[in-house]
Amino acid sequence: MSKKSLVIAISAHQPYIWHKEDDFLPQNGMLYSAISETYLPLLNMFSNLEADGIPFKLMMCFSPSLCALLSDSAVQGAYIEWLDKVIELGEAEIIRYAPDDMRRALAEEQLRQAKRDKYDFSETYQQDLLSKFSYYAKKGNIELMATAATNCYLPMYVDLPQAVQAQIEVGLMSHRHYFDTAPEGFWLPYMAYTPGLESIIRPYGFFYTILDAHGFLFGSPVPMKGIFSPARCFNSLAVFARDNAVAAGFEDNPELYYLKGEYRNQNRDIGFENPLEQLEGFLNKENARLSTGYKYWSNETDVIYNTAKALASASADADTFLDMKARKLAQVSEQLDNTDVSSVCCFEASFFGQKWYEGIAWLESVFRKAAERDDIELTQCSELLENKFSLQKITPFNSAASGTGYAEDLIDHSNDWMIRYVRKAVERMIDLTARFPSDSGLKERSLNLAAKEVLLAQSGDWPEMVKKQDFDLYASNRFRENVGAFTTVYDSLGSNSISTEWLTNMEREHKIFPWINYRAFSAKR
Image (cartoon, rainbow, N blue to C red; front, side, top):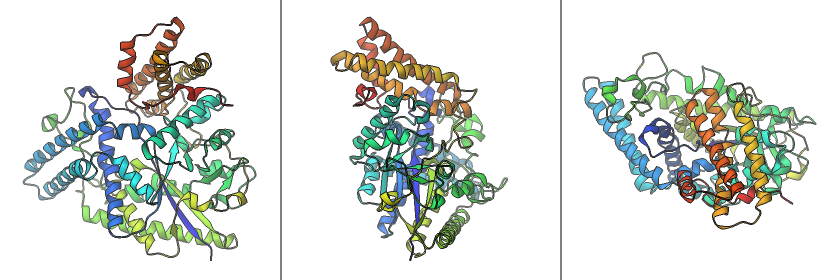
């Protein structure tokens, strides 16, 4: 009997944004909300499944910038302080809604959740979420993939192989630093691929990656089994295809899943709707609005959120999802002479909890219900590569899981001005590694900072935020700061003079990659 396998892959990423100054509370709030709404609930879900003896398997990728933020003691302390403000605000909400039974009950529920978040973060996980994710990885529940250093759109640098190598090398070093494992898979930022990347990825010991469906299906020759079986490039890097039916069902169909009427409306937060005087003490001195976590409305217009109804719907949607996948895989297997088939379903971590509040409950239901079925099996990519040398060889097509499939949103009229600056910085960084191949002391520190700033400037987060007009001015300024800091080092090395005070301050400000070696940008033999 053929195997019908389901792979759930979750990509967890946050831009490298955190500031100790109160002025940047809205930007910091993106990370705090992610911890409360996604990462803590995921760990609690894993704990529930483990306690009940439910087997579960999934794939996860943690970007180096997210790892750096979650492991920063200053961020951890600031998150607890933010939770204290959330709790204080919730207590005021309960008093305000004393006459309104339904909203008071929701405020009490969300206040309890904030208190539990504080306890779980401080006591249960000892402020170290990554260690607990690593625990489940070592148990075999999670298969961890590595990724690029700074969520970089790699195809833009394929003509500068040292730049791509540096992104991969530093990303791999970060993975080993935080998880102490040798990953088999490499997660392409934005699932962005162009021919030639496989020849840079494979030498670092990676065995597979995941592409968007059209990049796989438009490959040459055409994959005989479609997206339902992996293939391999000519250097034997295996490639899986994302099942875009999942992306269409979750993201594009307003009648399904997270936009269903009974689910919580994640846009109607009191931080954006309440009068400023009711938010006193929570906002910063500029009264810049941000999410608080207190949301009372469902997706139905002006209908109060009903927790029990929403959770029942999430459970039903888990059944629908598994039925749909099992039926499709059975049909495909029959058409392919009863061969083994698989479906790789990819999600951004922010989809669970932040975009779809009930998404974690849905995912837990999927794991619980899948464990009771024999027509579909949850698995991981590495388990589907036992006979990888028998896979069909293809050359995938240019593609990305961004824009309309070609990442045009990362390079358009709103942000294309960034390209010439970051590419020039990359070219200069490559030149510096050739000019200073074995320096030490202050010069080595300067070169390491230069490499770090170039990697940060390469981040796709800045052009993406500019395109979406999501803190676009902030993103533009951050990009300019990264390029400017690199240029300062570059000019200083030319004049053989650099300010030690400035260098030390920059190292403290951007604490990501403290172990970086600038030689990652050097030409490889």
